[in-house]
Image (cartoon, rainbow, N blue to C red; front, side, top):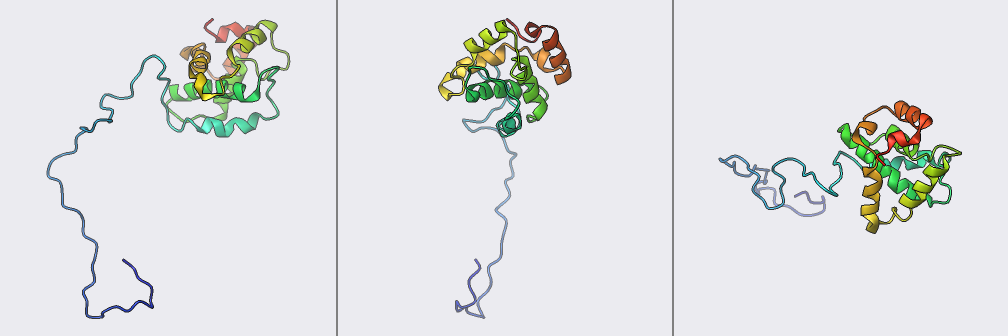
Amino acid sequence: MAAPDFVPTDPTATVRVYSSPPRRPESWTQDRAGEITDGQPSGVRLGSQGPDQGYALKLLHLFDDKLECGGLHRHDVEAGCAAVAMKRSALFGRGPVVHDLTAAFTIFGFLDAVPDAELVALREELFPEVGHTVHYAERRRIVDLVADDVLRQTHGAIEAAYGRDWRANLSL
């Protein structure tokens, strides 16, 4: 270990150098209790795993002046749509980008200044309180309303489908 210059040392002492730990002759195996051996698990309420999912939360500030939340709390809107964006990015096997959030906000009409009254009623049923961590099941309900096939489309195609009929992007 390095020592300051003012610490006296014995000039005749041998200097200790790094040595590697002994080599393990056997190969490594996944044998610990918490290791995943058969790939990522899938099933009810497990979501879609993908890299760097939390980056979607970092990108939310890009929509500060664009979101039309109506009577909903912004935090709830962001939480629900960020979850949809995370699902979309995971389907492509990558981290979230701004287009994932654009697609999610478009699907639920939060980028539309005058959304359909029926969609507003649906949003007011789905989104309240989903920003709180105890409401995971409600947030999963929002995510599960959007089919994988819809999320695999470009955000331009999602926007065009929303313009024709907002129901086309949701599995109601």
